[in-house]
Length: 468
Image (cartoon, rainbow, N blue to C red; front, side):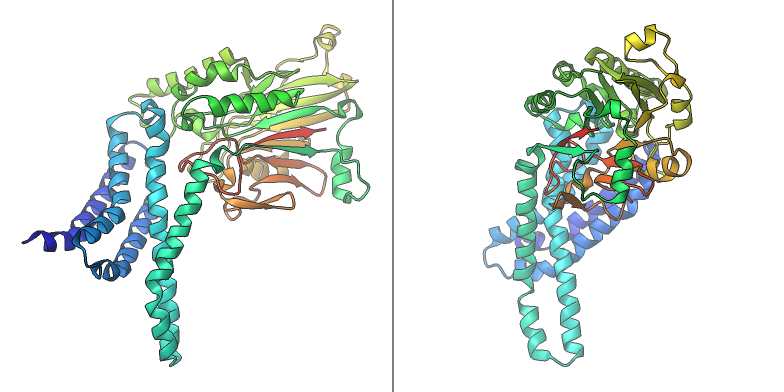
């Protein structure tokens, strides 16, 4: 078999590598992280779409006269599949939380960046074929023929556009930090009855109280500390009374946080910095050598928080007294929707007791809950599914819930102060401020970091200032 024929049949060999990749992925998930088995169908679908796209694109590639051009195009097409296979083999070789920051972030990111145009191209070919078939069925042969001849240009044009958008999201969008401000007691008279009801829940003594929310740092995604330092500077410039972090400080393991601990310890607020656990913080996305190793990873996270001066609220609450009124801050461990996310949160336990009173003068005088009838309860809960499933039906005393988790899938558009994100169909509340009929509120922060693919398009990394 000469070299030309061998390369023309390269797709057969790499298709076998794709199947081997699926097999390796299946075995890896079966042995290390069974919860990922639910994603197996997604990987198979991706490979099937990629195969369809290749079959449609191959005639155009074969029409290229120069052998080196054809070989280069084949290599470009199959590179993402081979890289994905290498990525998962690498996971079995070494704990991903111990990888160098660049490869931990951009190893999978490069795969996504290269694979997405393939899937877009496959989708265009499928739509093109459907329209062509309809044209033939309607006996519009001339139209169908002209439409069919344009298929390669359309597919590659859309693939190129998707690549350009993703590249922008990787190089610029992921670091385009934004500070949003939300007034929870609007001063305008044109607010709705529901918004006025929500504002009325805020005690007068807390008027003007500033809470800064940060969420979903996924700090292992950052190479260097420059962006983390900027987040700290922007937060401190807001002069917050309280800083809260609503989960997912790391991607895989607590070791990711250690190099950034000194920078994050510079985050201060009048009444302290508080955090809750997100689904990534438990180390559930890594195959640990033993239960003891996983427990040590979680303990490292808690110890690092303590060194940073952040208090972790594990199903606890505390009180902040201002002007004779009080803010009750409650925090729960992760309580996620669906079977892939852990449910550790216990809001009943958090509200059953008081961890401490920040206002030491009130505490010295004999602080009691009954002393402050005007209470505003703020809940920190990573996953907004907790608000929908547990808080809304069973805990009417929660006035404001602060969540994260969705990232808005890091893709969307902001129009008129409202985010329209790719997570809309996955989460009932995906981004921004929501107000229920009784005045209770939920704010879903789309996060300051990124996970999976290192990009953001339309949904910028953000810090949120909520003013009572």
